[in-house]
Length: 302
Image 1 (cartoon, rainbow, N blue to C red):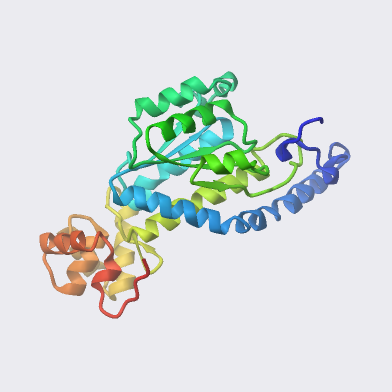
Image 2: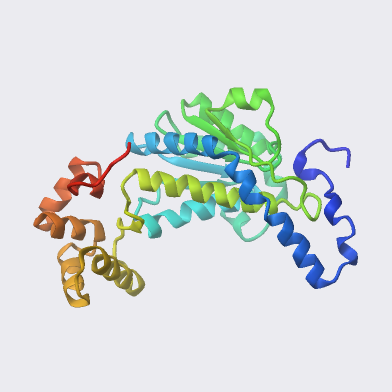
């Protein structure tokens, strides 16, 4: 293919895939997908570094900003969009920027990724600064829009990271605070990076934000406790969390949740420490929202 990017190479294991049955095609794809988790695991230290950078930004009042194009951009926007309903975060806290704007989420804007200028302009529009952490996502590692955004973010004082699925060069590593490179290899269909590279990207982003939210105290044990009731589904989930963690019946859990203003974390502290709602919220503020720091005998690792 005369292209040295790993994501653009031909996969010898799927060269005759067009002559296979449906079941054989599915098995080939599945066999290739099995390697993705190992590729992500190999980047565990780099992902942890990105988690630390994100947490530092959040604790200083900054943001995590994803920047990408095509599948990479959509996955960044998806991860950012899922934070408020999952962890009760402000929608500004984790943001996704995609080349071509919101229309590119539902209709491909292929030419939007070819120029660095719009990427740089997107950083100015969002007033990116020293408290922010900007993570570029480009599985091939070459997308001009992403490089333009990251170069401008660095000029504005932000920390930057890069997520790609081809071996990074020395210049790329030197330019950023962290580089994450799960090497998923050639795709089943050459160049179709929405497949293994896309799966790896989703896994990395899931891990990054989940770990950051845990570090910020939005999880107690393994339960999502920084949950604000806004619908019947979340009301049920909130009640079940209180029932499971506090040993309450459904009626008592519902009453406690109501007195906590529908906020599960506040309800937990109210019950455990015998506090009223405002007192519980003040106690949480003093420990930066970490429920575990208020529970006697519970380990806390910073």
